[in-house]
Image 1: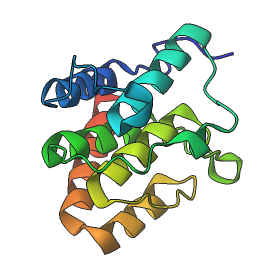
Image 2: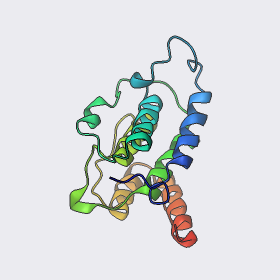
Image 3: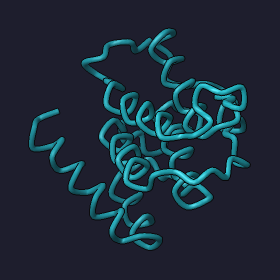
Image 4: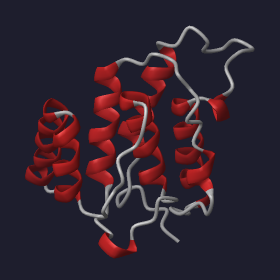
Length: 153
């Protein structure tokens, strides 16, 4: 069981998700249903990890609310994708789409493009696929990732 925030610190992602929610006109209203919202769903899975210490949530990939068509702040969404890449453990063949990191990344990709990019379990291969869709976002993610590496995180 992993529950050491020094190993996986979701605070930055949690703060970005909070900022995304704050910008939503539905926030705090009866129409705000977290489980039907890409950002709300991401918040739910991050909280699951923080409370249960389980990085894998079997079957959760099928629960991503892909029919959430709200318009999101692209800069915040891009930041959240970059943050997930910083947390990625590069599981390669052991990658699971039900991993909390993957769930958040897939949700944010859906908010950004309308669909998710299959993740190969390796950040460099992933960035090659992102570059094919959006070279500016790929550059942003790589710069963010390099800052993490330079900081020794």
